[in-house]
Every structure is written in structure tokens, then in C-alpha cells.
Image 1 (tube, one colour):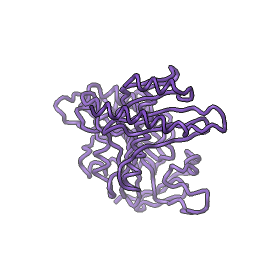
Image 2: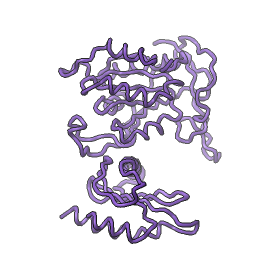
Image 3: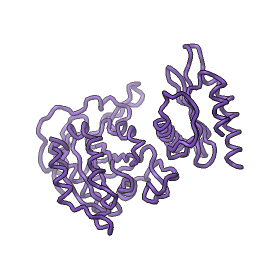
Image 4: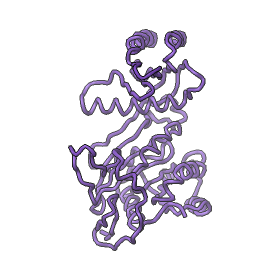
Length: 234
Length: 120
């Protein structure tokens, strides 16, 4: 396993298997420390004095409808997945899915000795406000894009712009799913070109949301970005 | 159904808006002030209900009946109408002593009538 020094939200260097150390950098989001919604926040009442853990990170998984956000969390989570799926009313607009996420989903996984709290956002645009809530106190983001949708570059554009502010301060990874779908005709080079031309620095990877190894690779790549204090936008 | 919504909406000027929506946030019927963005109301109602419903299931067991979210300026009341449908009411307080919760019986009575209509 690779060795990485990670700086979690309490800004104490954390060793992930001993790979290297982080450069000094001021905290990205001091509000996150006091946000009761964050995983590392401690109670102000003094009743629950849980100290911020040094090896825990909050990761947000965003992306378009049908890109596999729910599937990826179900695939990788070590605890029973917590979701908020509702019966899909507009099935035609939702890739014939039976259900759709309406508020958030949660899973937890360990990678490289780090405990990752995974928060999935709804893909439908009317729930965009949930993504803003879930990004509070997060350390990184995976943007999943369904390569088989009508216009994947338009989708990537939408989600990168929606999270532009977050990605200026935190790292992000773009995971392209359904890459080999018959109706998919956007190649990886086009995604890379788009990302670079628009000033983003997020690595682009191909992943199958049903495949645990693939999702671990995506999250490991994100951990390396966090360890290197990279951001998703120049 | 819409006439039931407007009757309730007009019954008390503290009711700013009342909406029937699917549990995935699609607005099916709405009555209220023009200032209230019904798409936002639909999405936020569905998100609130999903979190509440999941919490009740995990922490208490059984199914959810309703959720009341109270703020300084009023209350949002969400009730389950039937499998897949919600009634969301936005109630403004008129002053500090005013309790929007007092309107709940009236809203629940309308909810029952709408639920009966949905069944038939």
C-alpha cells in the first residue's frame, strides 16, 4: 500500500502507510470544524466530547442521474448503506430507473488506513441545494458522469461549474461510468481536453460503479490529491 | 383536489402555500402565493421528508406520519398522503405569540379528505 501523509480536518498530519508528508497549507475551511453536520465536529454542549479523529475524511460523491453514485456507495460501503430513495415519477427522464435519490446517501469505507465517510448527492437538478449542504466540511469530491447519457460533456460542465467554488479549494476526481455503453461516443481524450480548457485540474478516470476495485482506485487517487493539498481548479 | 387546497389556503392568511407532491419532489398540485417557488418547495419538501422518513424507520421503527419544521417566522408541515404522495404546508407566523401549530388540526382534516380522494 502506498504511504501518504494526510491532513485531516483537524490539521494534524496523518500518516497513511508512510508515503510522504503534506506541505504546510492553511486550513481550507475553518467553518467545517464547528459545523455540527461534519463528521469531525464535536458537541458544544460538552456532553459528547468526541475529539476530531485524525484519520477520517468526508468525501462527497456528486454527478448526473444514472451515473452510479448510489451503486458506488453500495459497492464500497462497509456498513449497511443509508439512502433516501423515492419511487421515480418521471422514469423516462431518469434512465428508466425505478427509484431516485432525493436527499442524500451515506456509506463508510476504509482505504489506506483512512476512514472515509461517503456522502452521495441526488442527481436531479432540483435537489442541487442538497449538494451545497453536503459539501460543508468535505475534504474532496468525486464527480461521476454517465458516458452513455445524451450529452456527457454538457453534464460535466454543469457539475464542475456547480461545484466550482468547492473545487477551487479542495481536490476532485472525475469518474466516467458506463464507458463502454453502445450509445456512448465521447472518448476519454475529449473529457481531458474539456477539463483542461476550462481551468480544472481534476484527474479523469474510467470506473465501473459496480466494481469495488474500480471505486477503491478512484478514492485512492482522491486521497493522493488530498495528501498533496491539490485543488480541483487552477 | 385543487379546490380542497384553495379552500384550506384561503381559510387562514397565515397559510402561505400548500402543495401536493410526489415523494421524489414533483409538484402535482399547488395553491398559494406567487412568491413561493413551487419547484423549490417540491424539492425541499421531498428532501426533508426522505430524511425524516429514514430517521423514523431507523431510530423508532414503523412508518412516518408527519414532520413539522419550526422556524422563527413560521412552520413547514409535511404529511404523508398515500404511498408516494405528500402534503406540504408553509405557514407564516403573524407575531411572536402566534403558534402556527394551531393550524395543524385543520390541515390534517384536509389531508384526510385529499387522501380519500387519492384512494378513490
